[in-house]
Length: 432
Ligand code: CTP
Image 1 (cartoon, rainbow, N blue to C red):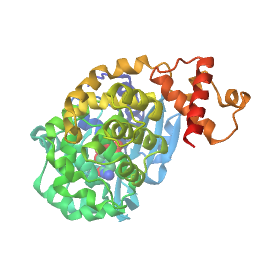
Image 2: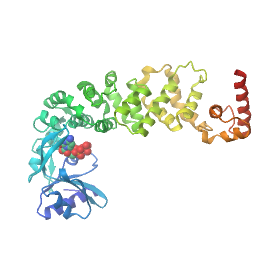
Image 3: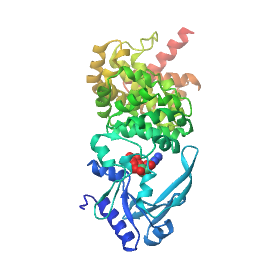
Image 4: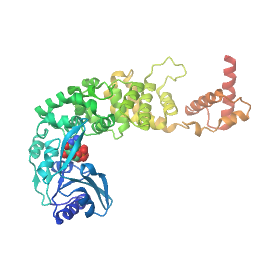
């Protein structure tokens, strides 16, 4: 067996150590699957007849990450490898975890507890494939099939329902009929799965190689209606969008925040609705803020406003967007519509303007002399030193100055800004 990477060489030396000490050891799980498919290898899992304490005794650097499930993390040259004792699982609790793990002595028993045939294969030290459930043939045929009884597999661990959709999308597999039927029957069990887990799987679908297919499967199966915290994500909107087109556009976008923003917009969600959905899905506050900012830029650029303070030309609207929502969010939004305009065109009033913004937007942003208060050459204290009364008016004046400076109506220069501040204050008192 030839090793193509440093990761594989270290994994081989772990197998050698175990075998030289009279234990059985194999490569298992995702590594075997991805190797057969010729895909990039992210990590390598090892299964062995050695018990966790026996594994710990053989390797210098170990972390007991999941001892109760038989897993020890062995670290070789800084690279982590999960080494797990052959096991059977019984009495599943909460439709997620086995109540009891029994360590066993043969690889066949260990493979039979796994979720899908393509994940239930092992490779021994000589490179021989151990494939009791026909995983290799299923992969060749492009079929995703549960090991044994699919109702039981999904019933033991409902997260597998989402894994099924993720794998079918990522590897472009057809879900075998009985597996699909069991997925539909067991879908209500998803209510037992923590929303963090749901988010992680959704994130992998959104960032994967064929998100359009993942979403289509969500629509066909209605899975999203069974999430623990009733989700407010209207996946059904995606039914109108061509799956291949959606995937082609999504995979051209690198940033997760941009893919999610586009997804919410294709589903006609407002920044507020998206925030509620992201909170339900336990997004981090930072990611939630980044995504809502991108959607807010979109809403700001779209709004046919009665807001008289809003400029009527696109260039000024975009420049003010950088002031209101930040340069980063505005750039990401530009990227999103440049690539994804076809998916959200339904809601856009003037298509010609939008193609213009995609072409010229970056240049407009580069022209911005200033977009943040900290860069303005005048501060609140300067205004107070010139006799202005401290209070909210100062903030309002500074914001107005920032906007005018961003639009190039006033130079970012202290004297000029002070003069303009005087005019604004005078205008204000005229109004009163
Ligand atoms: N497994 C399982 N049921 C689960 C999770 C995992 O049977 N709910 C088994 C599968 O055999 C899987 C292996 O444990 O291949 C390792 O799981 P994990 O590392 O989560 O996934 P991978 O299959 O390696 O794939 P990926 O890393 O893409 O999630």
